[in-house]
Structure formats: C-alpha cells, structure tokens
Image 1 (cartoon, one colour):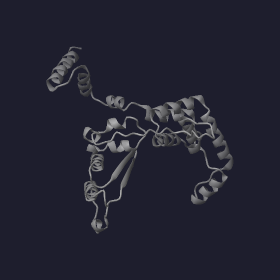
Image 2: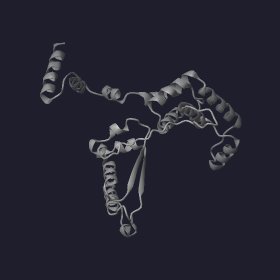
Image 3: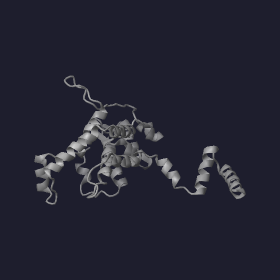
Image 4: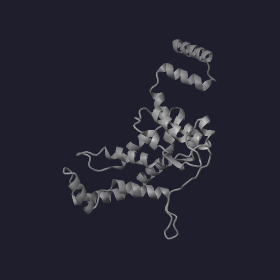
Length: 261
C-alpha cells in the first residue's frame, strides 16, 4: 500500500477518519505495483449489524474495482448471514461461500460429531486443572488455593454431568440454536456465577436456569414490556396492512370497545 510516505505524523481520530484514510490508501495503489491485501473478518455477522454496513460496502467496492488487489474473507457460524447484508452490499458480494463442518474425519480415527466436540469442551472448561497446573496457578495468584482432593471430586462430578441425559439434551438444544463458542462460554460463565459458599456444586438446574437467557425469544420479551396503547398498535399491524389512517380508525374501534366494557 506504500504507506511509508503517507502516514508520517498523522494522528488517527474517529472511525470515519480511519476509514477514509484506509480507502484512500487502497485506491491509490494499482494491481501492477501493489501487493495483495487479505482482510479476514472474524464473526462476520457482527459487521453486518453495524449501521449502514459502511465498512463492508467500501471494502467490497474496492475489491471489485481495478485498484489495489484485495480479498475480503468473512467467517461466521450463522448460515443466514447473507440475508443480513443490505441490498447495496449484497450486490458487491461475490456470493462465494465455503461451508466447513467441525469434527475429526481422519482415516486413522473414528469420526467425531460436532456435538461430541462440544461435550468435550464442556468438560474441559469446567474441570479444575491437574496438580502441575494447580501449582502454577497458585504461584501466579497468591489468594488462590485448590485442594487436590476437592479438585478430584469436582472433576469426577463434571464428568458425570456429561453423561446426564437432562444435561446432554439441554446442551444439544442450545447447540442447535447457536453453535458459536463465544455464546457457549458466556452460558457456562453464567452458570458458574451461581456458585457461592452455600452453593458449592453446579447442579443441572443451574444450567437450565442459565440457558433461559440464551433460548428466550427477544421479540416476546419486547412485547412483555409494551404499554396497552403500544400493544393495540402492534395488533393493528398484524391484522391490517398498516397505514396512518388505518391505525387511527382501528385504534378508535379498540377504544370504543374498551369504553363499552
């Protein structure tokens, strides 16, 4: 991109200034002299949630132009991510998709399913470290001590949870809703946060309660917080093809019915 003579003592400020500088740098190059640049956007669906999707639009636009050779690769676990793109962004997208399915399919071992990997991750994240790692942790954190006997009992209990039918069904249902490891780790952190001096062991019910925060319908929660007037307006939207006049007439009818009762 030949930025040595461009950056200098430049102070980067807002997102808009950074984006403008990046685009100007990309557009100033050419395919003969410039080196290829590859942008890898992890959790691509989060970029789609940004207002106007300005970054995606401009990157795709530069990638299709005869300027600096760039490639934009988006990684996500959402299969519907293409539907999240705005029309102008989607028109500049190459629509090339590569689906990668987790699981070991090597010929030397039996293939494992993606959910089996999730169960192994569940046990790994919740298990206490072995003796060697315990010493390292205790040396690093002076106020942290782990009794070896307690650690052994804890790990055996976590291992038993992996074979618990209720626990497995719960994890399978959550995996079907969201396969991202980020969400799974947040779910485990919420369950672990329930531990206290009086509650020193994770029960299946702790995971059930924590899962409710990740399996609930956000639209239903929004409706629960609406006022009577707002609920009336929502019902109008559902029953009719809404318009200002239609909403006003329907609202008047609903008020008349309320007054009569």
